[in-house]
Length: 585
Image (cartoon, rainbow, N blue to C red; front, side, top):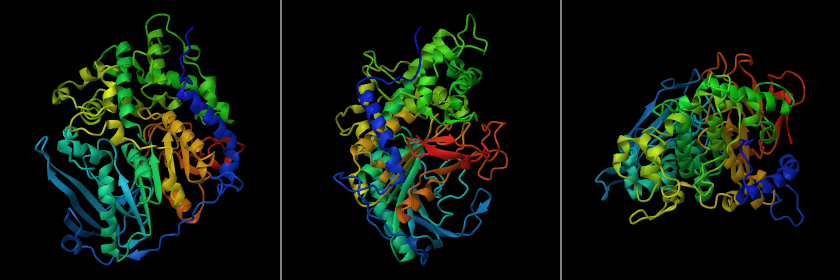
């Protein structure tokens, strides 16, 4: 009988598994004493401690519209926003100054479009001395409100409320140019990494003009593509930022998008309606899988509570072929056909070409497979006109495809050739001098000497059931990082998995957490986050109710998010409270 599970593939993944084992052996020592020891280990000694930011009060706002000057920058407006004009989680946002503008406006010689890097900056009257670059998601193209509310589901307090000066941008193109901005080489580069480099010094100068001093501490963070921006910045711009907060990061985004097309082709094989790929695995059948996962894995952390904390143990405990009934005949919601199991197995094993070469990472099985957001990514975004097909066709491939792809993105996804088309994300061609993998991903992501050496810190947080960016890919990155620094990566970077959480938020999960405060306390006070408490957004949650919180959970259930490779294990007491769990091997 064929066994379908997310495997430990040979070669590179086998090496990563070995690195992971080494990391687990070192975890207790490193996480308990983040300062390390001495001896001959070059990575065990203490790292620089950065000073705390000092507050200030704004002195200029409206005058910035005409009085602020910076190279290739035009300020279009500057005005005071009264307290209470904006709210978050039912609480007013304090008085602040909002400045809008654009940088590097130009007319493309390729498509004749006018491009610019649009931005918005919000600066509180009472400032905490900190700057936050809010990196946005998707294919960008919109200047989201610069409030810094990206950490987890329904944050109770955003960065602006905490006193940060926050900038947001469209990464160099507007909504009407999405996704065909990928035809312009410079627009590609701005989207990939250059917009951050362009905006950062301008933003700091704008802060100095508003407060009379530059920021004492600077942070960058975001979710999804924003998490990618953050990880790219950690590798490229470590001297510009003191703290990096990446949630659900698509740091190998071109590969992940190709994997989405691979998944679409697997689902199409078993869909009853190819125009509705969810017919391949509707929620009733996904709940069947989720229940089977919980039956095998829920108690591995010490308590049956509807969450799989011990992801690694679950890999060996759950088997799709064995643990989910196989239909003897037609599908009826109580079983899966052999063909469905084959398709699921292919998706969770990870995208492959015809030679069996891995094109992206594998995935763990988790109870969050039942969530609506999982289906949105797997069945709709993988073939739709605003995400994966167009990103692969126009932004990541060199040369880009014809704009005619827009007329049939489903057809493009289902006819994508993983032998001949997938290599285009690594290719250069004519005016496209950087490949998609070059401009979209962090160069040498496991070597962060500059970040580490200056005392900066990095937190990465991701849902175990993220359907578009594999948490296993992020875990492999962290294993490589830890190996690079002799088992001491936890001195400056930590990675947390959120059981049940999907992409950025949602699912049967405790998805409300404040990663930003944890990061600030680590950067400026030396308080390493040995656990981050996360809360379920059940009925009455001020940040917004997550309708996928199970009815038998307490509405405000809490759990510790543990730094990988540690696991939240039940030690006794109320199973609804984080205090009943310890982060252990």
